[in-house]
Amino acid sequence: MSTNSNTCLRHVVLFAFRDDASAGEVDAIVADFATLPQAIPGIVAYEWGTNVSPEGLNDGFTHCFTLTFASAQDRDGYLVHPAHERFVGTLGKSLARSLVLDYWAQ
Image (cartoon, rainbow, N blue to C red):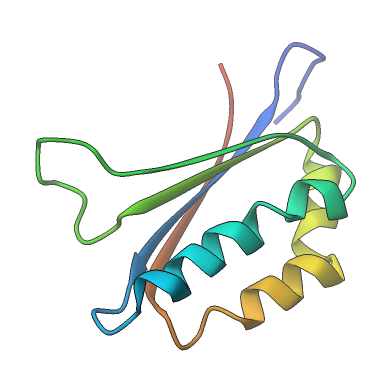
């Protein structure tokens, strides 16, 4: 896919936490995720929130994180960055499932 300067790459991450994950563990993960934009070059925007949809179609996913990158190269650098790899390594005991989707904003 070709890109131009008017497009950006969105990296969307959804988390479903284990039933036995404490509120403190979830809060720590959210806070830890929020440190990544300062630690990893190439992240041009970051936001997160919890599901508030009344439709009931979230399939257990409660937390959504969206990172924006200017290029696929920036996203690829994020994926292998030591700070990201460390963060991913902390998720095992609290996370039940994750879903990741990347797309070029139209």
